[in-house]
Length: 535
Ligand code: DHE
Image (cartoon, rainbow, N blue to C red; front, top):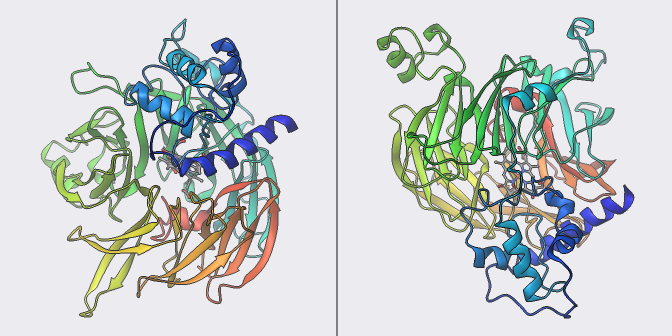
């Protein structure tokens, strides 16, 4: 286990360093030529750790022809040689010669025999009931404020820590599935939380009882999970198989929606799925077909607040069209990454190539272009009220860019870029809180600046302070306490920590040792859809 961990940590460090070079020039010659080994051996030595021996994906994505459909072979060769921006994929040009890398590319574009599948029967058979819900307490078994708890995902040894957000100390720690990814999703007033792992496992955890309740494997390679606020519906976005899986709150399968175009001819991976509480629906985007889906999890028009959908549903006879089925918005460009206005009537999306667009979910069409470039990371966007030079209050959205050292600030009415705030380097996460004048941004994609968090004043739109950790050690991903008084950042190392800052003075208050704490999530901020955090 310890050697495995060492390899993963090495891969991450190496990937970060090499990814910056990606996209610059031809594939470099290997530092040292070696006698070629059979491709299966090369795959086992260099790829299987992250992509699995059967190529079905683990920490890294599945390496199968269908999954690689949008990547041309010469580009795949370049990724093998140089690594891939914004991922943990390192370059192998220093270890493998050209023939070896080409053989690996041929291998990953060849079908796996027998073809991988994950049927409804597989999903049902994988379900594990860990505890009988009838035995669980209906009140918290600890004395901390249940709405100010944090969950910290520790990727170093695949655990999750529960922090008391007032005392700022850990109250519990439990083992998670391998390689959780994306934010855990809270339901039922913060009592239940649902995690998704890259290899398809969905875990339901009872935060009041500190117990894993049930688990199910919903796919082979999963993007993320969404849950309705009452916890009765769970949606899972998969890359493999190409599907959106709908589960009930106990993780029983409701149905699998095959991710295809309208005619059922072209199959697609699902980019991601999110809960749109004000619409009582899940919103998903397809990655290989330019469509956005809305799947209602309520039948009754009474459940929907007044507004366009409500009026439409009334005309349709009191039933929400698209109940547990997709209503499709047809687009011209696919969406890899997207973000919503606070009322969820509009979606701001971008493809990996940086084509940005605004989609109105009520009229179900694109309504504007977004002037973005590089690789905007809209999923980590935040919003706030900003007063312009003439004293006018405007709602703005800001996000990082995985390819450019900037935070882009966009007016959410005119969709124009108000400001590009230069940062130390490309960053992943941006975070604030309605009670804080500051937003925190990392530069974790920059080897030189990944240890620096920059603090942006949300009114002047200027960087006002830098918080510098130890060079070479990543400092990233901030989440605020419920009241916005403290900001918690990750020292993203295997012997790392959650570092607590006073959100006003920006001074460090304490550090809690953690094993590579990749993300942290505050119950209150999530269930209230706080404007400064991810949803
Ligand atoms: Fe993430 C969230 C996609 C690589 C850590 N990441 C998300 C979400 C998506 C996404 C769609 C939102 C899901 C949600 O919260 O429901 N991530 C992608 C990619 O496409 C990308 C670039 C390539 C890939 O490998 O899939 C990618 N992500 C990474 C990493 O390499 C990171 C840094 C380390 C890791 O654990 O894999 C990483 N992603 C995270 C984290 C979140 C996340 C910590 C949750 C952020 C939050 O605060 O909500």
